[in-house]
Length: 99
Image 1 (cartoon, rainbow, N blue to C red):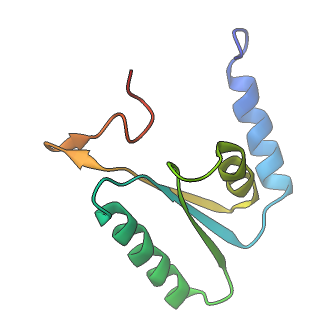
Image 2: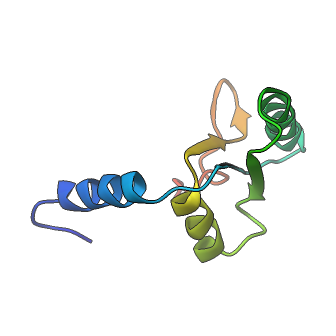
């Protein structure tokens, strides 16, 4: 955790991202009843129609190692995230922000 100059890691990420990126889009999601997965797959389908050469990674955060997810994020020129909802809000446990 950066206690001093916390924006340092954001600046470093921007430098790394500017210097290296593959023609890849990563979609990360969590789901309770597969509807968020369906949404991720529909978005991926739309991206494929727009650009058949882009690599698309769809990753279920509850079933993948976090290091693998971070690796794919660093490779990507775009990252999308989807989360389950409940009662018009995020399902916090699903998205990793719960207790």
